[in-house]
Image (cartoon, rainbow, N blue to C red; front, side):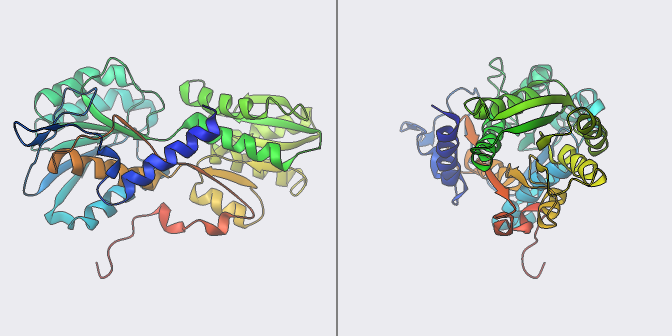
Length: 353
């Protein structure tokens, strides 16, 4: 299946999940002898029908803009189900990206000693966390993963993973570029993050999308560390070495915004198109200001809503849930960014709260 059609299929699955109580899990089998739903395929955990107030925990990799958006979706889904009387939420995040793998084991160990009904988490190394995920499951605490670029085949303990297609989202940016520059020879530069699975998936998606368009020539692809500052510095160097570059793609909005600063400084704003990835609030504002050209929205808030709905189905309603749920992604450029609802960046409390 080509990536474009994979994204469409993912969108259909997500639409089913996000309409109320996850109609996409109707594939779960029924155990007529007990009247309960059998375990989701692939996990040793079994659905429950817990009553009363739920106690949930949220453990991201680190608390940044993207994970705040996921949290906003979780909180709004809790509100939609009755608020704090329905579920409480404990948030525990590592203090930085560099310490996440040192801090998450302690966080999980601490949560397993508390009265927690489910843990919602993302991790950079699922195999490293496997002993702690296993320990939680053995105490009857199901783990719901989200925003994972890869899933370990060694882990039968998590219930589901609600995520998006890193490769597919970048493929969509490539498709946009192919359409945008059709019939023109264009020099392209790419700003990469740190080496790793996420960077590789995003880079591969873009390169695969443009490989049939020889008019798009990548003349530079350099590491910019996922940051705005490095995005600017690396772009400055690229423009010195390749003054004819007309399209720059940053594999994260922050790097792309650094490219915007460098292009402005060079007096080439309007001559160079710049693409980002993730549709952050700053990225959207830059598109509205006529600086950044395009980005791809990875629906972080919808991811939060989706994973909370999966928790409700599995923990409270006794339903099996899909082992993986893909949230659809969407490209926004200068012509369509006005269609994006900025409320998707933040938690919006119920009216009157």
